[in-house]
Image (cartoon, rainbow, N blue to C red; front, top):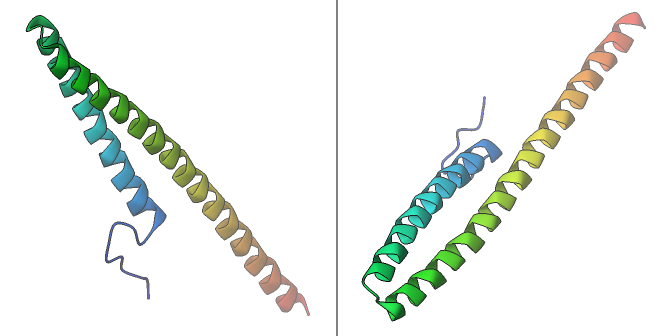
Length: 101
């Protein structure tokens, strides 16, 4: 009987999907902020522009962290597949050895 995930974080795939959606939301927010910076520039609202540039900077940092998290999750998925494949091969090898005895 398989384990039914209760939250998106119960397995690596769910976590990876969540981080992917988060990355999309951050990208959308970055585009919106870029537009707001351009508007503040046109309106000569220097203080607002500075605040928006700080927001853009923090969104860029967040994007780097999310990208790193996605890579780590990809690595974990690959390693899990590798380990499960090795475990599957060992089980087959052991059953063949048991059959030939």
